[in-house]
Image 1: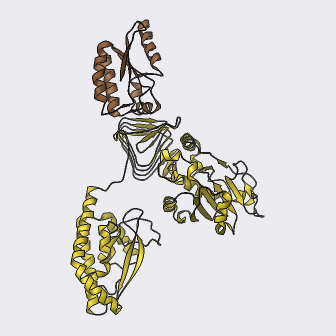
Image 2: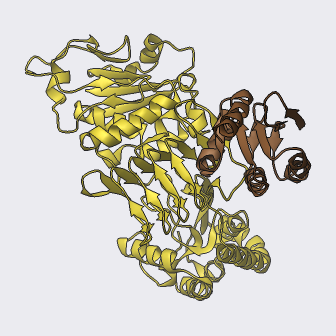
Image 3: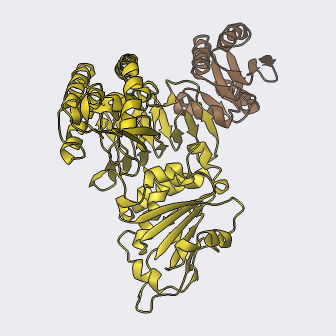
Length: 118
Length: 458
């Protein structure tokens, strides 16, 4: 997982590129890393362009990340969901919980739009 | 008229995504296999015999269609090579094709027709060659039209090209929305747009929205919403608070709790998006999984008991068998022939030595007393082909409408009903359905006891 901070705009936004697979074996790792990322920014984008598979544990972890981000008065947005990953988000109705964008750039700019609106 | 249905596996690779390992003709559309639509259409067109020709094994198709008695038509089967041209296939089946007009359905899985239209006179009046509106060599006729046949109007008839999972999905949805009444579909149909199969449990708080087709042995649990435009196959469970809309759920699928299946095809643990063609194999069995028929612990226990009894009888009867058989054979009281029967294992057959024992003297009476004519059958209990007690084994040449587990001894002889009689079938059927461990033990004793009084055995 590669994490970087985007400071190109007024708001600092963390962008995390998720790895190929998130399942029961590595979701704990994501959860732990997310807590560290939250220290740097409460607004985070998960770039899912490389993510090819996610199981229910992985999905549960992402939902838990969203909850933690909201607790820190931030948000977690998803970008570039692949077709297979999209299927599981639709099936489990998790799509309704997240703001999903076609790519990381549009997810980042959506944060800026909110900030500008405020 | 006769019909030839030709399919080639390589033309339908996408079917592998939906039902891997299935013959294309057996893939269901609105819970009815493609082959049944083609058979119905052939009958409407006036066919009296159908030959199904495929370049892959047709065992499963044969098992499903058998000899066509269900439709009142003769169905036969033949194989072809993937490289065979239509001409070559017809040449190989020249005997079937020689005496009558032939309708050739070549590589079409689905033809739109209307069960209420008259195709018989239309097909009889058509000249030989490809049918108008159909592709080259897809639906064609050979032989001359019947002079007396006169068709005033062309009945509704069109072909659907199925080249992708998306087209399959579109076809199913089209049938469901617009053409349900054109075909004979499985299930009870008390109101328009709603077909429900046998043994369907719909919990009180579940909701069914038409149009919908539900197969046999389906459980719709509390709070679930099925439809609109949902096709649920056989042996499906939709768990609590899930919804299935504009989707196809194939046979033997479990849909987990709180899920939303919309515009999808679910087949076992595979979820397919028909629009994009993408599929996802679920690794979480609580989300989506295939339902396999497993042996319950009670059944397993019963099988173990049957095997133990068989092993004990083998040990007890081994010496009498080895001693008496050669003597009785030399006296002409013992004769054996091999007959092929349906096995207790699904889709299996078992060859059993059927012994005729003539009751002449003390030794043959002893052999009957010990049931030595069934001695070799006991080994088939150990291999799972037979139970110790069960139904009378059915020869593979006979038509078997219901499948029960055959036994070394059968319930009818335990109850001393005459063999090969409808009464014995009823007794066998009753006990096959109502058997349990204690009943089986009692019936084995009764069967053994009744055989002591028996005269000649067959």
